[in-house]
Length: 411
Image (tube, rainbow, N blue to C red; front, side):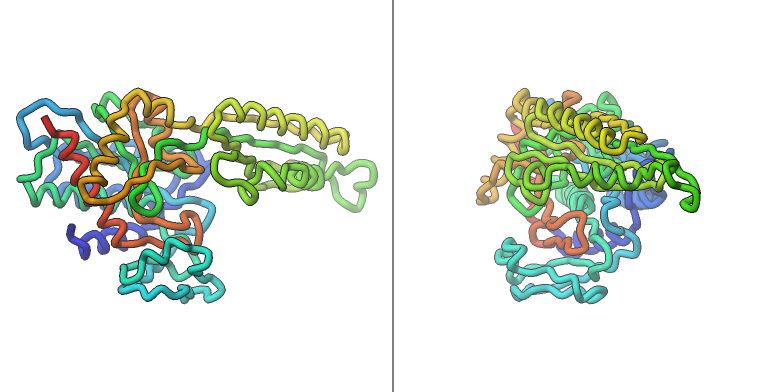
């Protein structure tokens, strides 16, 4: 792999402001995703790929033709262009740390932000490696721009090394994955892939074979606004009722702060509004899809309870489907995971099957019939100003893809 080129691509990509914007009426939801997509189109053409385009929805497509004459499955690789709206992605200032010494990392833009070894035990395996952080005032965007950079390096490397046998490889970069709309405009008939891999995983040497099943609840609390000077017995403050609703959500259980492993949660992540109306957005998550029904019922029950405490309010709960656990769909194409494991084995690495307490575009691809496990890309602490990435793990991810395409091309 060309480490310098891979690093330079990653640094270039994270500097493009591509934060997704929930609730807007355009797709993609931010102009920066168009900008990054156009940049990738230029680079893909320079590398020498075919069928390169940025379509009317901002999705970037490209094809690397097969260099063998036998029929083998078409493999697709995917990452998304957007970053999470939970932390600012504007004016990202990447910090490159060569030959990491094993110490805590104080971030220069906000010295209260410290990437501590005690909180990041995976740093113990990074001694001597090259790490990338931000200055502490924004996220980094390794989720999923590390994956974008890895896929781009794969394409360049295969063009430069035509002796590596592979079938048709399809590349697809999607938009607005972070707000649940990554595959809204993906035409799988156009992709024409037998199997796909999302490059959106943390760390190294992991194959994500399960994701959460996910719904989104929008809770709307409506009150009555009037000038506070004449508000007695007339004002109904939606903020107070919404606060009571939020306070009644489970905290000791069913919250991200108190769960791990296979335990699901309810996660209120956005509150907007005023006296007349307040909107809360709540993530419903569990590996067992049927458990989402119980979570929704709990929210409806709380709405009735809070309405009884604030009888002049109106509280509605609207639950929409987001994505589903990919495990069942992957079972229909066992080669998808088995070949990813074999790619690691060829490199002398121990591969771990893992579950991800979140989702990827692969969750929806798999649900729609395209088996799509998720692979590691060297990103850590996503959605946080304490996010960091390992160049060495990104190189490892590129090496896995090189082996993977050869395995799918074997007779």
